[in-house]
Length: 255
Length: 285
Ligand SMILES: Nc1ncnc2c1ncn2[C@@H]1O[C@H](COP(=O)(O)OP(=O)(O)OP(=O)(O)O)[C@@H](O)[C@H]1O
Ligand SMILES: [Mg+2]
Image (cartoon, rainbow over all chains, first blue to last red):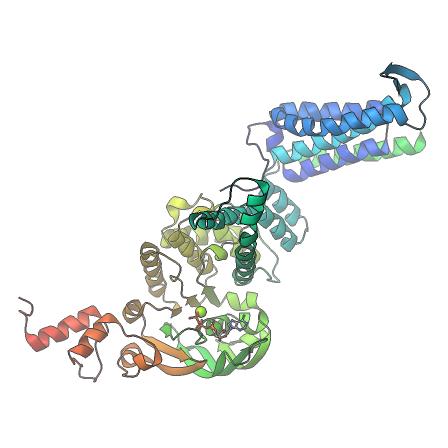
């Protein structure tokens, strides 16, 4: 069964780190370039993320994500290069369009920061099974019901889409055309909505009963089947990361 | 010893015109296996939902009377509290899967985690009920990938792991193929061996004749009959009310074979004995 997840199973140091430490890392790595908005600083953090992704053996999976945002980044460069408010120093001209150093630098700054955010989150998502990530948050006080919603979105949505294709098959078996032009597809989709919505409503209602009779709303403190495996040194790493963030903050304020 | 006492239970769903249950009073002994029968819309499912407290805590509506389970009054207890005494399994196996767990093994832990059962105890129970419900080979599979019969056995195991005293099953085989149905009935017989009090709604009268010591016959929200299995299936007015009888009872009726208690036999073995007694050992030869 497909579950919505980008997790890539690998044997790496990064994979062994517990979800909570990684969440703290992502938080620090994403926030600090916004506190300290210099190009060098953002670029260094981005480089660190890239190296960690390499270490985790998942760099290949990041490429499609990066190439997707590449188009957006290109647009930023073009627009800021030409029209940034503080543009003064002409860099080059093509087809009578002038690009300026200030704009290009500014574009580089935001792009690097965006790429950094992307890489940091990729590092977390590609190396952590979603179920473990959610459980790690529930252990630390996130409401179990919110955790359930996150779990079920990952599990039940693929389930529903396979339901949709079952209903589609049934309709195709009865001679309805479901493939072809957009109009044909839309026509095929309309009679799908009724059964899909109805069955989803009934399913949701019944499933909530099933959850209730298994203590979903119990007032007792939850326990966990799986023990959290936190490798040695992670407490120190978390403290270091937070101290780093504090240092960046102090640095910025005294600059 | 009494397990459940129901006094003047009536219930009307919020938007309904008529009462789904009307003035039900009955007592269930510890260790009883009650078969519940009745035509469509008789109130069988409503009865089950009342036993586990879904009525009146999940479904609002007009609730009257009381249900006492041991010393617990369902009206004053939460569904979660009641669920540790009374377990419910219902028709659709698919909808009973939590959707929050990626393996059968973890799925069994769902209710235990919610109820704060300690980890060691959790593992002991999961292993026990995986075994009892024959789910060991699929323990690492995704629950959604199981067959209907396996899913339903998983639902039963998940509830058993909470160790209720009473087990309510509302037509657990109505959406299963013949093989799944057999699997689930085998699982149900394990419940009986565990000495649980079982309440089973089913249209499979032959199976009820095999398992149940009492039959509760509901119609239009009221009790038509609540008596020993043989006594209920020996009534002459069942067809009139849209209910059949077990196959062996029907044969016995055709042959006008009644036992010394003036009842028809309900099981294969009984019918055989009576046939032999009446026509001699060489019958059929
Ligand atoms: N959620 C609801 N809201 C309103 N009325 C309901 C609801 N559920 C059931 N009813 C009504 O209550 C009555 C009893 O229904 P119930 O489902 O208990 O019958 P049943 O004996 O289980 O029938 P079936 O054999 O179809 O499962 C019916 O008239 C039904 O229409
Ligand atoms: Mg029903």
